[in-house]
Image 1 (tube, rainbow, N blue to C red):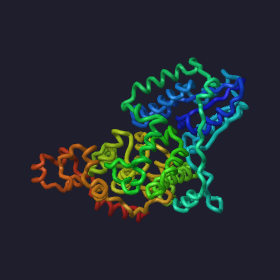
Image 2 (image 1 turned 90 degrees about the vertical axis):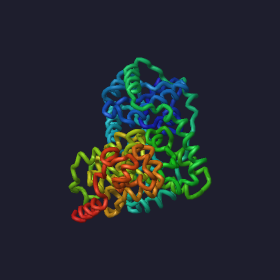
Image 3 (image 1 turned 90 degrees about the horizontal axis):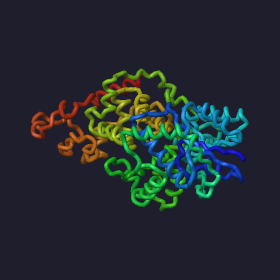
Image 4 (image 1 turned 60 degrees about the vertical axis):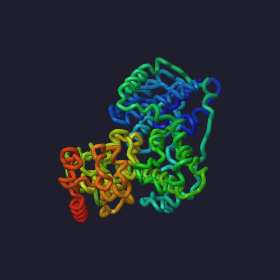
Length: 471
């Protein structure tokens, strides 16, 4: 009898899971499959939405496995020690299956386990499958990686996309091991993490929920996506990003469901966003230090300002700019932020406040339930004008005009900054313009009910242009 091990990470699904598919397909008579997940304390962010969401998703996935009579064993402690112990406990442990993580912490973790197990003569079967195209798959004709999105996208769009795989996992239940002693410590730890959640996400996770949301988006929102996607109050986006980042739905399934519908501009724009996801993954793969240093070498010595009070005001939604404050409060309350608003708050932090983009990127990493390192780092460097194919440094979003354009009646602002709800729509975007007489009439006082702006955007823009030009 041979023991095959399936190691789940950010691939919390049964359907179209490449490593799981191959693990099941490889089983021979009398073999057994041991399904594992490692609880790594180094990755905990207790009290943060991203933490609560992920472990809610893990618990839901475990339940789905159980419905198919498959046990998910939870390992704890040091990862290398945990796998060394497995080898000791299961002398017939011969094969490990998992889906690769190609960047950051995950990449280092994967390489350490591959080295350990191969030195023990265990076959490691690792698969790249979290993106439509592998990082090394789309290159220039000279074999070097792209640095501009448009030429990358032209080649990306012309390539066939991988097929969607379906496998009836329930038919393999007789091969799967259920070893309560192996997972008892992990069971206790997961129970502790779930009982200490600040936000309950149980109704917002799972493979079935992901598919339902995607189908609803295609049926009711995709056709007008290109027209409505920039308006945060309309809720016209797919809300699939959190399911993709945790692997609760396959990127191939998303592609094929979107493609199965009618061809129109909304479809084209959405698919292009999937290309951006692949593009940023490719960039991060070839530039693994991008999380801590600017992609553009010219800007690696920028003397960002150090102003903790500004940063705290930005984090807490107390900048005095309503659309910025509403966006940050949405993030803090829900763990998610509309994409248009992500650009605005990133521009505000780096261009109005001249604070280091790394501060914002790390804050997003703590909060976002759909955090994807490659896309988040790429997006922040784009906004800061330090990244690949980034917005020019002289393009600086005006938060007030953006607010008027994308939340004209202030509906989104009123939802997350309720102290402004009493203001007329024409005044809600710029409370600082209220006269003392208007404040008295509305029983609303700047500096008391809502903060004065922490900067003057016009002056800040001028200073930022001069600052970049001096580099």
